[in-house]
Length: 136
Image (cartoon, rainbow, N blue to C red; front, side, top):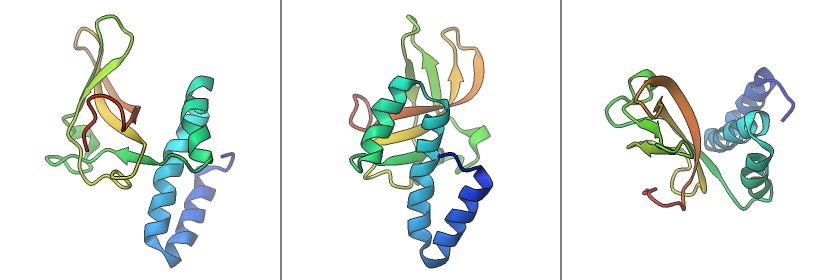
């Protein structure tokens, strides 16, 4: 987790010489795990990383959409903060999700709006694939 992005890229490139599929699986999970490790709260690190490190949970990344592919700026997915500010409601249809069928947690990217509909840019959300409202 302490290596820099260049070292991680070199590691994945070396793995990819033997197996692109293995490299993709490692990159997908480690991208999310590294971001939770570096930017998440203590509670998020415990909730998401501990099962991951025990081999009990996998991560996937959800950026691509049927109408815009991987062009994140043109995504149609929206996340709006609830009126009471306690959570976000995500409305998204994603496709081509690496490890999507087996992931327990999905890093979902969506255009973010505040409770008044003001554009806040693109945000990433760790979503429990077993949670209410999530459909594969």
